[in-house]
Picture 1 (cartoon, rainbow, N blue to C red):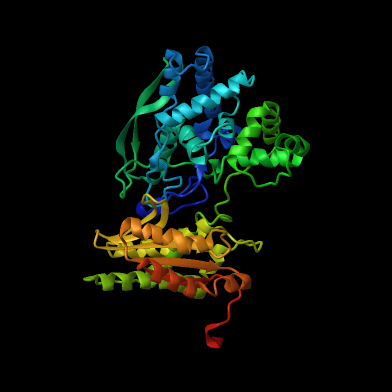
Picture 2 (picture 1 turned 135 degrees about the vertical axis):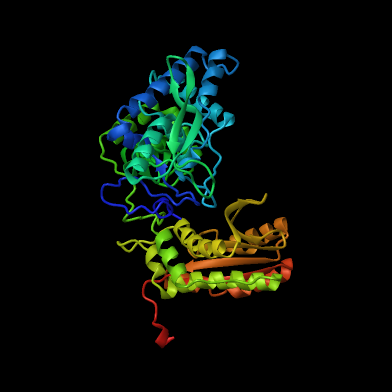
Length: 474
């Protein structure tokens, strides 16, 4: 359920806040560069606050000469611990609103990146997210956690104003890390009146849409693209082979560490651009519009299940998967997997659309569905269960995925063995005739997998081509 639905808000053009789904994190992030580019309302002065914090930490690490045993270095580590701001309902944890945040280990990674920047001749921080180009494990979610953590009191002020305008009930929320006072060299606690999330029972924080992106403006892959198109000769000499526009982050980090002048040129280039927030209406990645479309579909096609046996349970899973197929193929759900310019959306969009259909039915029938569950062999896409007795694992892939057959013949059976789950589902989305040709042998492959493993895997092909034959001609 969206925030506006739960609190019965009729949004208008004046409502510039992002309307989160309260039970599932939306994979968007607070981008510090957008704050730098356009400070507004309670966020005026926010960039200076962020940079003031990082310059303070920068000086601590410089004074400690990068020695982890130094008291100054340890003080910097303590300041750099940023728990995830779960109240925003943003990030990569689609099964809920609880991610990993930034603990002490990650604080050490960030401190290490700052020390490397100091060694490379950097004497002050202008955009802290530049550190993501120098180390692994500092991605969009971490940058967003840090930004939101530093601006928590501003987000709380903004949310309180929205609640006052719409007469939304609030409770007192207490935070031990409300904001960081560099003069006192400590986190200052705050109290704020915030609405309550009915699913997590945690407070809710709202963020302006204008500050949200699917990736930070300054990021490692954008840095590589800049170098690839503007400093191609340099990186060819550096790597001594023909480089492409697609490389690993470790290779990008290697280049960034060796060439601080390229990092500086890149940041100056970004400052000359006019970056914008994620377009909610266009929804090019398929991160937002899936929820409303699937909610309407499920309301119009309610399902009630009676489950007393394992056979009943698997029939229910079959039915929910079939509803997803029907939605995509016969109710124009395929449109949500394509952009207006004719390009296809990614695998995450297809998975979110699937989650939308199945989660609505699961919630209505007291069935648990979890997204990207780590079972020891890696993350399985979905797990549907009623207690421990009735469980099914589901993988959803695009036919064009290069790891397509590996997922079917190795990945899903390995998950089933690890979880001791009898039944697995391998759902494939096809977008073109070439995709159709590619999956023709899927049932034969499934037969071999089931025979070899003793587990039951069901293969389902879903046709998301924009021009499908009408039902009367099938």
